[in-house]
Image 1 (cartoon, helix red, strand yellow):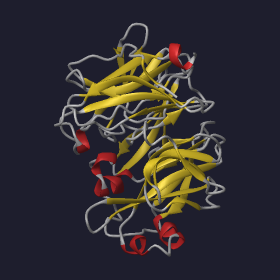
Image 2: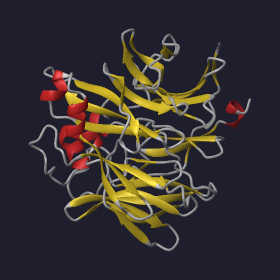
Image 3: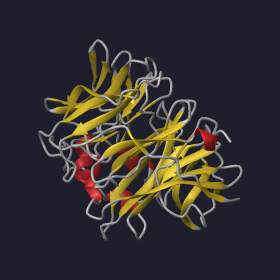
Image 4: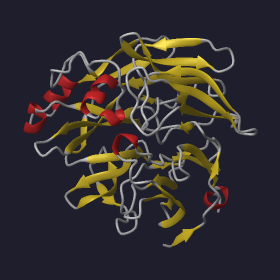
Length: 386
């Protein structure tokens, strides 16, 4: 095991004076040819979006660096953007983003060339790898409970209910547009009947991640305790709504599926809060070098699970690290450390949120180390290919 500092160049692919960011991690922002990188453009980044604020959904042409706006949205935040994707059934030309349609948040599927659009009934929080199924959340409820991950502008109709039976995790067919409730907050309350805090707290769901063969999803049920601390129970279930399991009831943050059954994430177990590998079928788990990978971050794997890409929350010097970790060799590669000015915290912070390119030769991330929020790309082919 060793640690190396390769320091490949972090190349900005967007420029000021406007701000640009993709938002979330573990989602590929490049189309299938690598010609375009998807991102948002905003006029500001020093305050959270408010009711009526729009961001531009746009494409960076990688060869020329030109940004082209193709749509606007009022369903966005600085942390997760608009949960944009390239639709896997047409990854060369169709994008998805969340939007506001009157008194509801929805998702839009848009052809970047023709401009043709289709609207799905719920915002997208995750897509299957085959692109035929999407999972959605009520981002008005998320904004009520934790504004950093929600969308401003609409009231949650169940704001006074702790466990509404008509809200929760939704599932949609991206081809037909048909959608339905997959797992409600009332379902969660009933399943977690032995958890007294869940019974009495207002809960919300977040961070749905779908496994590699599109059969199961992990997500967290979240609530605030008496001390104002955020508490989570991590669940997994089939995309048909059955076979629900508790991955951990002590807390979980960011996760990714390394295999169809094994989840890697910043998870709390009896041994403490570390990065763990957890088999959701057997319940077996092991920590992953907590002496080295010692800080929570936004973790995601390349296709064969051999390399982990992650960032870290700021250290005492307000630096955010961007890391690669070779799982077999237990080898850490520090790609860089980037200043995150201390005034950019909470709802306006800029996590690096790293993402792999489709050919796994590049990584993309958001950063404000040069004074404004922009998208950066690094060539890591000399590292992951070695």
